[in-house]
Image (cartoon, chains in turn orange, purple):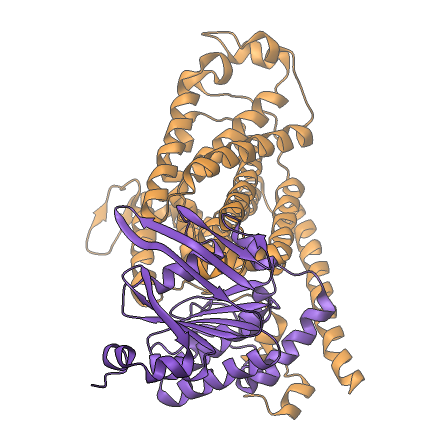
Length: 360
Length: 235
């Protein structure tokens, strides 16, 4: 009895360890094998995973429809970028108005700058949460959407901090594949543990039924603010990574459409599924590049178009419509990846103990 | 003893509770009956702190809990099974029960209580991994009661446990209420189904438009002409 219970456990652990080793080896192989352009897309996958997961935490697991993600990313990106720039770079960048003196000579290594960016985004998320989380549904969506636009307008106008609409250029290329994927894997692990913890259960219970959650003694408002703060922190981290991945940022990158790009990933993957977000982030990021030919001249057989910029986004719009009509729950619904699920659908040999029990 | 004095609640301009007073003695079953909108649910929600009262006091064993946070009230042993069941539909039975014990930290005790709940409701044990949203109304009500028991209540408040249930489940739920009461849990029950509620209750209070019009023992009220006419549909 005891051994039969222990054995499948160790099989799953072995499979997980095996997958981790294979994943690590693959990262090494990719790093060697791929050209620089492919590597860039591969890194972007990782950043999008962090963004999708953080948006899913608040939208999918806590049930709060928030559209402020671009704002938090912007806070993280700008904070991190300003902190890592050398004094000389700052002098070159801030041509119209010089940067405020107390920031002019500040320079941090990447990690502390990234963390400070995340923390500042988290702090602003906490503030916004305390103010706006009394709202729900569409009202919250509008309030957070407005917030992200406010951030963008501030970034455009606070010349002495952000260099305004000129943006910041020539940032160091800190976001190597290890930084990007390391952060993505850490975020995924953190979220898996968070969702399995009593905090995660509290988040999900709030999503399912707020009044029942409250009458269980859950501090609903506090939990919402916590979820919002964690989500903003992660968005800030992703923003910092993005800044040092693109090496140039300006306020226009962080318009609300950026939030919808991430929302697309979350909805396609499954609102409330970590696995779904990870898979969809990779698939969407790669197809955004793979479908780039749609933007160029196309030979359709009967006619040749001269190239319609943005046509590939039409593909995603159509895909989103199909998903919303035929599979509202997205790729994964609220389900998560597990080895047992794989054996249930026949991709792995069934466990002995399971078939003996005659499972349903 | 749970004691409510002069409790008054406004919803905007609507005076939902006009200063009601009632006592729930320890170890007894007390029921509030009355028509729709009489303020029965509001009373329960005000006791647990989901609705803020304008004035009045709620005390539990002599200790004032009025105006407290729901979390603190639940920790003190007063728990509500909200109206319309309100289980967490996307969570499994196990997760629902674990959330019932949210205010507790004693892990071993929680597991023992989980087994106790499964003993009370074998059907929940059979389906402990299933999502609560896939359950029938009666099964969801079982889960809602089981979830409330997981918080180790001293007072269990139930809002319309028979609402929308098949007659067979109504009987079952009331059997369970008696069982729960027999192990020493005080029960405060709000019901539209006055007949069943009064037959299990030690004391009944009749509510009308935010006030308590009269009270008595369950048997007395069952025999009372006013109750018979207004709530039992007899003439």
